[in-house]
Length: 388
Image (cartoon, rainbow, N blue to C red; front, side, top):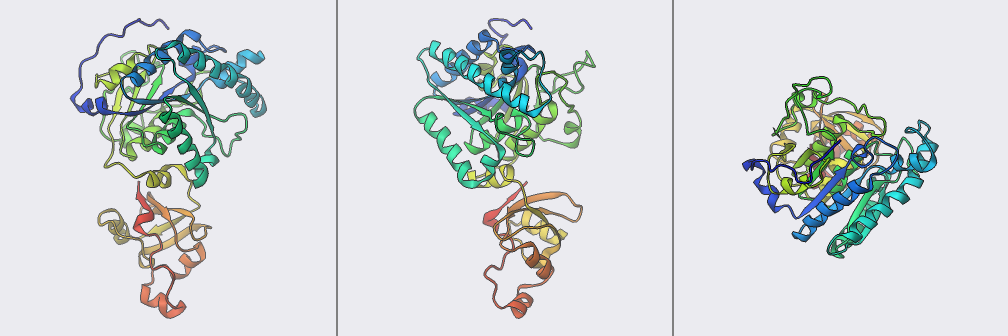
């Protein structure tokens, strides 16, 4: 698709004024931007992206890139005409394509002034779910920032299998942004942003400029990807928005054919779709609990317990529990669901599933009479609890 050398300057959006203060930014770039739907990476695009990201660094910001495109690039290297369906073939394409992709990024950032080093960070979901490996990844990214190097993050498709893969780099970018406590996530894609109907089906579709909350009506606008090389679509982008805005940070979804749009975004210009943060910023540990680790089970609570947790910031006691789903042990992550069955919180449980089943609905005095003084009074302590 043709692009202008200089994007037209959009009007200033007051609700985005805080973006000018964003010091740490994650930029996700989709496969179709990098390859144009072909089985090779466009060198010119990578160079323009590097120039825009370099300008942000030169402005005193730290920027990480979450990149797609390894499998797409590997298709060309290994002679595939389209994205292969078999997992081993996709992994082979990722292995070959990742080499080419990183060479292009390294060369592109060698051309900017001042020259910048890049660092490759390959992640899998299980690598982020385990707390110590999550911290190792976070510390690696922090060290790259400290040395002025640009982290280039991708999913480790060469070893991922269906059970542990992120499935798309939109989710990966949101988890990275949460892990490093980024001030802003920008997802660059081949559409202008979120529209009120699919642009490919409705030529009169209108761009939604500002999303103050991810309502059911907004979520209903998403459809899966239809491109041959990409794996995301609007569904995964809204899932990423859930994570980032839930952590208390904004997300901007914008058309990225001209990477200089990044400069307009951080200037608070009205481009793309702005997803407003929901509530206060979560601590790094609570971000990990809320978004990265997957729950081992579910604890059902009554309306009174839900209100105490959500509105009064209390801990969960056995008296408010009405049921248990799944098997878990003390120290595992569980999700909490209200009477309507909807999950509203996650936390680390002090009790196993068997203990919760035994003591649910009982008060502390009853439990002490049956078992003696328990090690913990709370099933989930408020310090180990995050409201979704």
